[in-house]
Length: 194
Image 1 (cartoon, rainbow, N blue to C red):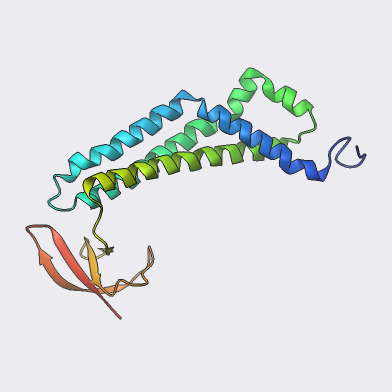
Image 2 (image 1 turned 120 degrees about the vertical axis):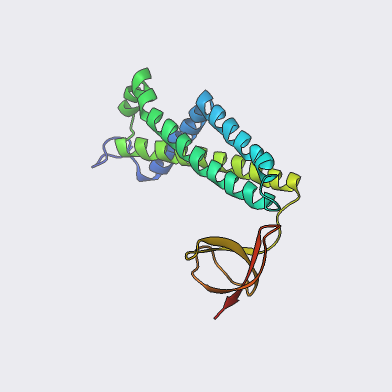
């Protein structure tokens, strides 16, 4: 034991272990939460329903699966973060376990950081589950055509870059030229210029 500014028993090397112990306990508590399973199940149902909605898009099934899947991941990931985040400290106060924990050699900031890391790990696991759901849905549907898709600002349209798509990054602003359109199959093909 050491005496000093941290008080008796507060060694600097024990801080990460205490934070990780709180994070591990938070993750276990979150996994036991029934609302988590309901939200993940509903997100996976939304991802799977994109197969049926994809049939309405005339050849753009994989784009519909990706769009609806990513929207589901975003919306339900946010809802999971909100519902679990709200209940993190509230449950500790309601059960009065926080008082016993803070009576031990744990600082408040260690408690908050541990809770935050537990929430992040829970969200990471949920994100992985929903991403696997999207991948399995795409695999069931037959995959997606290779290529890079672009969104035009004016006029508002979306299409695929079929020439010059090497080295493009997500969100990168580029200039494109129209190569061909196929109204029957709803395809618009572009070529990168410049």
